[in-house]
Image (cartoon, rainbow, N blue to C red; front, side, top):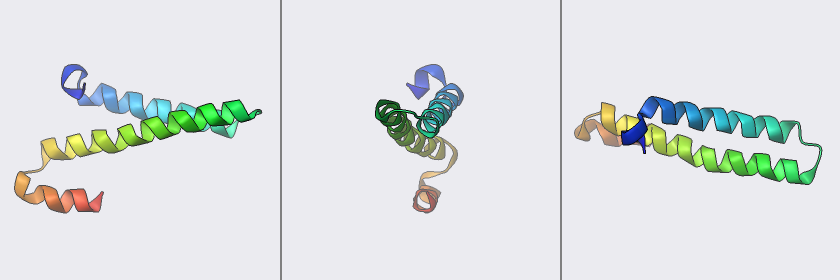
Length: 72
C-alpha cells in the first residue's frame, strides 16, 4: 500500500487516526467509546511500527539495517 500511495500519506494517515483514537479514549463517557478508541490506537499503533520499518529499509543499506532495527 505504501508503494501505491506513497510513504508520506500512509504515515500521516496512521499518525492522525492514532491521535484521534487517543482523543476518543481520553474523552470517553461510555465504555464503548473507550473500547473504540483503544481499538483505533491498537490498529494504528501496529501500522506506525510497520511504516517506520519500511522507511528504515528504504533509507539504510543492508549492512547497517541490523543496527537501526535494533534501535527501534
